[in-house]
Length: 367
Image (cartoon, rainbow, N blue to C red; front, side):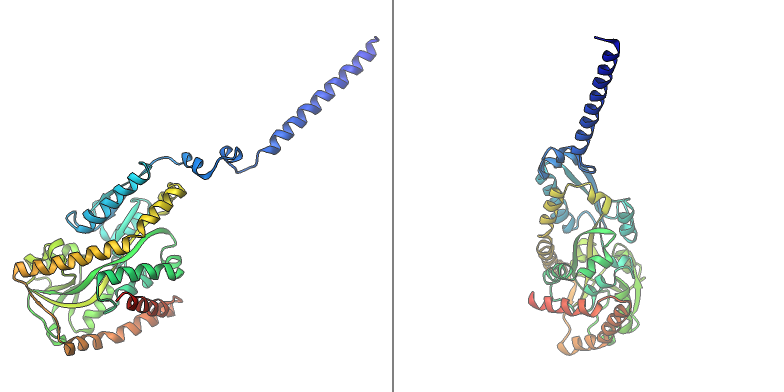
C-alpha cells in the first residue's frame, strides 16, 4: 500500500469520525427542551415535582390579644391543620397582639415581606380599600354569620375586588368582625342623646356616621379603647358587645345600646413571594381549608356575641334596644352618607354601586 493511499484513507476516517461526533452532539442537544426541568423531560408527574419545593415556615401577625377566641379557636387550629395535612411542608406560626407589626403597618409589612401573612382591619389604612369598606356601611347586616357568608360570596363573585384592591398580595380570606353597637359610660337611647358626646370611632366610615349623628368622633385603635374610656378621653365607643370580654371593656362600660350598626371588614393577606414558595398542591390544600372560614368565623363571632351579653349581665351593664321609631331616626340620619360614599367610589372608576347592591342582595339570602 502506498504512503499516499494511507494518508487519504486516514483523512477520510478522521472526517467520518468528526461528522459522527457532530451528529451525536446535535441529536442529544435537540432532545433537551429549554426551560423544562430534567424531571419533566423524564416524564415525571406534578406530584413528583413536589419534591422540588422545600419545607417552609411562615409567620402570621394579627391585632387581637392572645385571649381572643379567633386566635385560639380559629387561627391556631387552622395553622396546626395545615402543618398536619402538608406533612410538615408548610408551618405557620401565629403572633397575636401586633407582636410583629403594628395594626396600621400590618398590610405594608405583609406587602414588603417583613411578615408573611397579615390579618388586620382595612380601616387601619384608610383610602386603600374603598370596595372593601362597603362591608362597613351602616345597617347592612343582622348577624356576624350573615356578614361573613355574604362577604365571601361577594369577593368570589365580583373580580374587581381582588383585581383592584388585592392585586399585590394573595388574598386568603375576606370577611368581617361581629356587629357594632354603642358601648357607653352614660346611657343613650336616641339620636338626640348622642349630640356632642365624644365617641371612639373605628374608621373613617365611623367618623362620618358619628358626625352625622352629631357626636364627636375620636379615631383610636381598638387596643387603645380601654384606656381612652377609663381616662375620659372618650365617653364610649362603637364596638361589638364581645369586646366586653376580649378587650376587657366590661371594666369601663356601663351601658350598651344594641344597634347592629355595622360590621368591621377583616382581611387575611399573604406576601406573594411567600405564597410562591408553596407548591401548587399545597396551595390548593390551604385554599380548601380556607373555604370553611366564613362559616367558622361567623359562628365563632355569634358565640362571642352571646358571651358578650352574658358578660354584660354578670357585670351589671345595662343593655337597651332602641324603639322602632328611634332606630328609624338613626337610619334616616346616615342614609344620605351611603349615597355620597358610593357616588364617590364610582367617580373613581370603581363599581361601588354594583358591589353595594350585590352585597345587599346576598345578605338578604342569608338573613
